[in-house]
Length: 461
Image 1: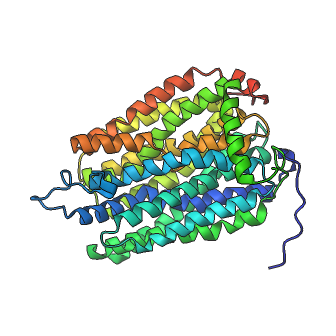
Image 2 (image 1 turned 30 degrees about the vertical axis):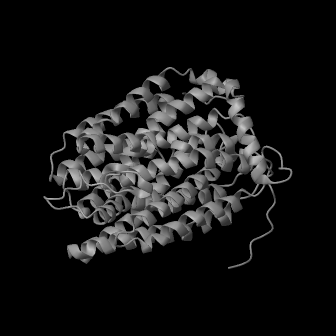
Image 3 (image 1 turned 45 degrees about the vertical axis):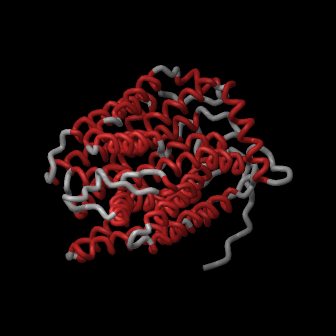
C-alpha cells in the first residue's frame, strides 16, 4: 500500500468540498459499528449476561425461580432479568455527561478523525474484553458493557458531526439513509456468520460459548473496519474555532454554553426532546427484543438470530424505501408515519404466542421496514435544525438517545418486569414513548424551525 498523501484541510462546514470517496468512507463507519449494536446489544449480550447473572444468583429451578431471586451489587437489590436493562440505563445516564462534551470537543478540534479513532478503539477493546465474561462474573460483564456503550455513543457523535460537511440540505436525507442502510448490511453480514456458527455448533452445550465468541467477533469487526473511514475522511478546520488551552476544559465550558444557548432555538430544543422520547422507545425495543424472545416467548437462539438477521436486511431496504418516500412527501411526514407503525409493532408483540417462530419472524419483517428509515430520517431532520458551527455539540445531545443508547425505556422495562415478573407487560409499557413522541413531533412547525436555526429548508418536509 502506498503512503497516504498529505491531507489538505477543507473549509469547515463546506459540503461542496466533499468527494464520493469521502462519503463512501463515512458510510463504512456505520458498517463497522453496527456489528456492536446488532451482535452485542440486540442479540447476544442481553440473554448471555442475564444467564451469567442468573448463575450468580443460583436460580433457575422451580424451587428457586429467577423472578424472585435478587443480586446485590453494591448492596442494591437487582433481579437477574433486569440487570442488562439497568446496565443500558446506567451507560446512557453517564453518556448524558460524556457525549455532549465529546461533541463540543469535536467542534473545537481540527482532528476529528483522531477523536473517532480514540472512541472507536476504546469501545471495540472493551467489547473484545468480554471474552472474559464467564462463570458468575456479571459485574465484569456489566462494567465492560458500560464502557463499550459510552465509547460507542461518543464515536457516533463525532461520526454524525461529519454529515453537514458531506451533504447539503437537499442531499442530506439520501446520504444519511445510505449510511444507515450500509450499517444494516454490515451488521447483518457478521450476524449471518454468527448464525452459521450457531447452526454448525449444533450441541446446546456449545451455545453459550459460541455467544461469547460472537460478542468478541463484533469488537474485532468494529476495530478492523474503522480503518476505512480513518483513511478516507479528511480533517477540517474546527467549525467552532480552534480551542485555546485544554481541549477537554474547553469542551466542558462549551457544553455549558450550548445548554444555555438552547433557549435561543426553542423549536430545535423541542425536536430534540421529541426525538429523545420516541427514539428511546425504538432503542429499547431493539435492545430488549432478544430478552423478550428468549425469556417470554421461549424461542431458541437460532430463531432469534434468523429473525434479527431478517430485520437487518429488511431494514436495509426500509431505510432506502423511507428515504425515497421522504424525497416525495418530506422527512417530517415520513417519520410521523413510521411512529404509527412502531405503535402497531408493539401492540402485535404483546399478543405474540409463545414458541411460534413464524409469528415472531413475521413481526420482524414489519419492524425491519420501519426501523432504518425512522432513524436515518430523524438524523437528517435534526442536522437541519443545528446552527452552523455547533454540529458536534448538538449531535452530542442528540446521541443521548441515538443508535444503541436509551435509558428511560430500559429503566421502565426493568422496573415493570421487576414489579410484575411479566415480560409482556414490560414490552407493552413502551408504547407510551411512541404516542408521546408522535404528538410532540406533530406539533413542530418544521420549516420555521429550520429557518430559525439559520439554515435553508429542503424543498419538501
